[in-house]
Image (cartoon, rainbow, N blue to C red; front, side, top):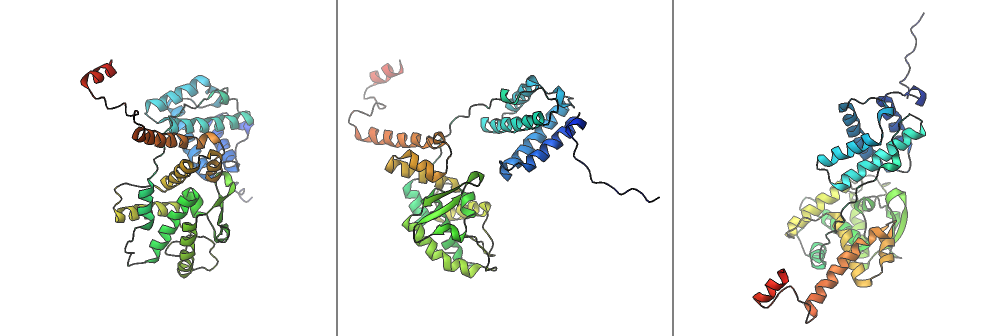
Length: 333
């Protein structure tokens, strides 16, 4: 009798899963089937789960029924003892909630309550936005292009101009196709988080840059079917990492004296538009923020700007420089 044909490894069912290895495998497959999470988020969750699994193994826990609310609190306390920042712990909390909901849906006998997990409140970190002077230097200062390929400087300034003009995330920038930018109407169709699209205005400077870039782009193509607006020297779509490296290179060449990240150009867009218009809702729409509270962080920057203007302009505003020693002592009291 011939040997039985080998069968592919099967995913355990809920009724078969009484150990954590099977439970994590079920959750992994649920995660891979999810269309609500981005690939980047799924990868982050898998990494968080691996760390949680290692913690459970160290605690000699091997069944879902052994994981209760007290165990979860112990794990999050363990994360805090490792000096992880609040944003990292908040993401791990989200990853655990997703994991527990999956286990509850599959009836794996885990008593822990996903709703009991509350992420720590992250301290609001004000984004650093480059000044208008720094951006003008980055985008306009004459510079000798690279002898290896002078077309790259024109491309780089075009893409940085577009980020600042439209408030784009760098991931949104590199996914732009030719058909997404209407130079006649001055509009770009942007695909943001969760594949949501929005229309954003494109400034005249950015339109000029794109028009200058297009013939150079055509000369760099190896495949005429390539749809990407921005391509590398080999004619393929540009990556987010390449954008960062090119910004580092240009900043160093210009002697800006500071390291810039592409996302800071997006911060600058939001800050400068809000300072000029005061229209928070419009900035929210252009940035693609789902919640207005996310955009409101830029109002703190705007208030800082107003406070500086007030301190400089109001004749009785400068209270921080007492004129006498007695005033200094009184203030300290």
